[in-house]
Image (tube, rainbow over all chains, first blue to last red; front, top):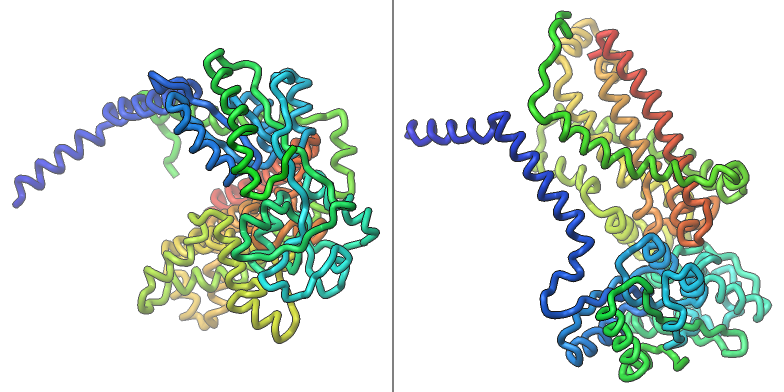
Length: 274
Length: 270
């Protein structure tokens, strides 16, 4: 009983000896360094194929996941890696050198800036979809919200996007055109915040995209905003300048697929034709 | 005190590893300072949205810290000095918010205090009170994520405290509250200050639970971290300026606390 225990103790002593810990530490450091630095070049890791990094705005999450899947089965040599986020966040990441190949935004402003700074190849940029705003309400519309003017009612807790977000800017324009003055309880930092506040029941109504309303239609209902006051968002897609020729070809194939077969998928999720 | 009579020999390689740690912490913080647009530093800082976010952050984090002291201290004391069934499980649950992603904390708060939550539905249905989107919601979010830090530090302080001291106080006729406030706590001042600093810093930096539970209401729930995220999205320089201000505030408070804490140590506070 005692002997194995002693042996165990000795081996523990070996592993806790200062030299061993130093060696271990330096080895761990080396591995970590390789991991951190190696991550940058990992995109070329697949020996036979190409990895295509697609950065897309959050509202495209479902549609682009389907599109990437279908594209991959058509082009088995290309592996599509999707990264979703708010348009502004993605723009920041890309302009700071994130390894994107294709970018898709919910607003033209982001891609215009990236084209001006030559990060995105301006010749590759096209509009591939549109989106429009809708009022989202709790399932069954318990507060009986019928039109945009109901958003000003005192018994309606309203959430909007922040004014700097495309969804907030367009909501402000729509409200202005309808001559409705509202007092939002919260100016959410992105459209998913608006959806979350309505889904959780904290807000009675929110202004989000029709695609959000359709994507969560098991939990919320929506009220249309007439096209006379509604603003269509244009969704641009483009190719990043500094990528390899092979990546560039795959990126063109991907964009062609998005505007081709992908259009059907986009319509299914509520996006309009460009 | 025979401390520092001989210089401690450094284990091989320790300086290298220490330097790596230091660089990884210093570099990003230094990079923020380097990028701050000093040209319009004051104009950004004095804008109404910045000042309102700053005051809100200071106000709410201060209230949170006070609430953490008033309620966290008794809980830490109870965990340290009382035996009750399932104590280890209760203790683990009390510190769970520390490891929980704050966003999940926000969702959890909604389930409890939201309009459809356990307590929130009663408040709303009976009294027409909604907590979300108010300053109370911001404080509640901060409290939820920050109070575990206070409990963890103070519980171990209570456990390590010299019981002879409290025993003496009791023998001399001090009542339990008096013993706690005038004997126990002063004797564990360094731990108390560390606990307050950690709690306050965590409350000041709180983002995820606030945006999920309290929303982004300028003047009510838009604290500095939310304002920073907002201006990051808006692509203005405000994010860097506000980040720098937040770093400066936290840094000065932590330095101040640390000096008092070290001072207490030197006076033999432990």
